[in-house]
Length: 418
Image (cartoon, rainbow, N blue to C red; front, top):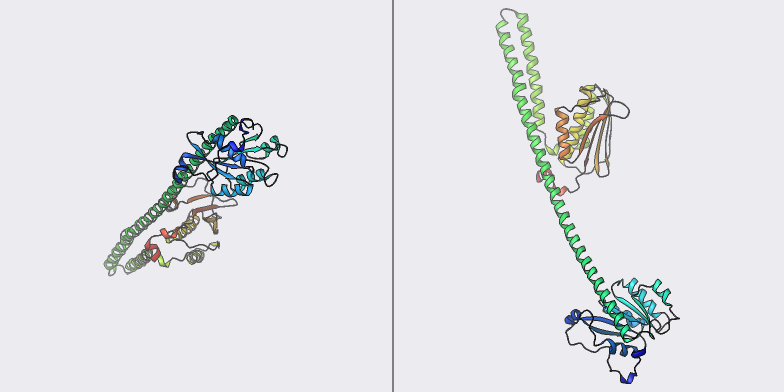
């Protein structure tokens, strides 16, 4: 190696385990770990002699020595922070050095350490083939590697290692920041979901209270007016009983009808007010509503309900009200005589469809009932629409996501109380 080819007897006898003055912690900070892999011990001594007094990027070298590919594998396992490997190609085997390169890059997955191939038999590993096939920093023949070229090659490799290490550290820090931020966002999303759920349930409770207040107002006004009219007819009948028996009888008959009507209205209102959460069994309630509608009104309803997961009271009530409102509107406004009702699950959503054979309404105007239902659907993150059906009549569509985290349900919901 020109000026490196010195008589071994003139070299300093430096060994691989020469201690450093600093502690292990200081060595990690102030030294670059430099691994020499060669089965020729003179190469180790000459390399240490040439590079031992130099500093590279402000640090000296801490030499590690391996005399075979197997020793080098063990050394790199023990010292993953090695900066540079000066590697001979031919050792215990003709391709020991090349095997070590693959081991470092593929099995250890160490992409940071810089590997300099230094061979005395270039015919065994031609430069152009090696550079193309192996991830190495440089390729040098021992005969051409003067002390100056050795210094330059090592300096360049250490500088590259430093840059790659900084990038790797920055990437790791960035990944940690991204992971931490992702966890924060996931936590915020869960909290937001819980908050929205609580808000939805609170709004539903308010809606139920408003509905009950409306029913109570109906009792006060409609039923009160009906009973007042009945009292007036009774007074008129009393006055006419001695004058015109026929007219008095008509008045009493009318009063009787009004009282019956008032009683029916009171029973209906009280029944609505007395509804309890634990009385809601969605499938049975839907089937009962379908059966009662068919029996009392004379329409035909084809009903298909797929197996459903556990739903909250509010979700069940929303589905029930949607069917109730859809049937009422189809009969009252569309003069429908036939319905097709389908309730299924698709892509994590409850999908509600009610088609009728009634009059097509090209410009649908939502009344009080459908408007209130649409507001409830939006609170449940759902979508409600009324549109022309593909074949005939109109179709009421309702879709909302299934609530997975039932733990967020209110304690009242879990107890099944109103």
